[in-house]
Length: 505
Image: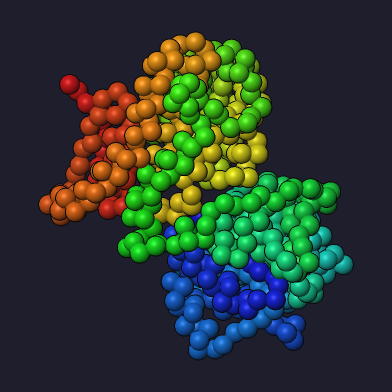
């Protein structure tokens, strides 16, 4: 997923946007760009292929300043990773620029139509079509938000787009249909970004845009509407993450930092949810009653990637502790196989970000068929937390490393809490058994710390093994999903071939 940052307010806009883009570098990208509106009302753009430092060097060579603007880091989907194809993209007049995550599926048809109307295209991207669409509607007398509103109605695909126009000063327009985008609120300034870390140093008051939302940002505040212009009231969420949590904190890289944060993350996920005295589990407030938990006849676990491995382990936990049948589905496959779901089913959707498109689509399918939805998620206010009947928040804090670590262990912890709760309300777990399990659960952070203290020995072992070309991870029962996750980690980080298999004996 590419990075988006936008700002309107009194601060110096170029350093703020560049800093925000740096905080999104973990997403991966092959080019970067920035567009700002200057005090004389002119639009200035700088773009560069490769890393952000190339863009910074371009700005040093030809200084850039402005009153407000937008920036982007791009991972090429349409067109080569060149300066010409880097975002932001302009219209014919050079008065409108757009940055965009996602794919415009009908961009070729739109491009042909716009070309026939006299528009000139200079890139190989689908994003440039958006700029020309906004230009077309602006020339017909629409302001920026009206033009964006008309543009999204003729586009098909998945997108998070942000636009500015010199014709409509001190204003940023954004629209979402698929990829995540978050609005930041502060006094006399507004922020927009594709992920929280980009703006966390400036505000913790955010609004997560939903599919079908349009946001208009000005220094005085933010207005939300749907694609038809109907006003939307969406209360801001307060992000509890400390900005320092999103920094490396002395570690070599974010993944190492997040590995060592696992004891704290698991401990935070347990706080306030278990009582060793009574053996009771307390889930967060939710629109699913104890009687409904008691009456469920089956559980559907829905997830993708690492979260799917957590779901596979969750199946063992729930079936063993709650004696209820569990199916595990990959989010992208669930809605294509016409799954059998009833009102007596509990669907548990697992997503670190709460914005995983396939998981959200599968969750909506399950809800449409009558299932209650329980989300396991790390981000308050994300799409999953808004759409689910209840959420178990993992409290892992920001996870920036591409390969999930602490979020995975917190998902496993949350699944065990859900399994214990289901076992209790269904009368399948004796209080003494629950207390024993809870005692072991509270020791888990300390045990993780003991393993992490062996880091030098583990590093020495890695140095012995890193020249091998193939690795097999073996596990039985609940450890089979852990073997799958271990193999995935090795492939993600080292590009060494690895596979997880069930242990034969």
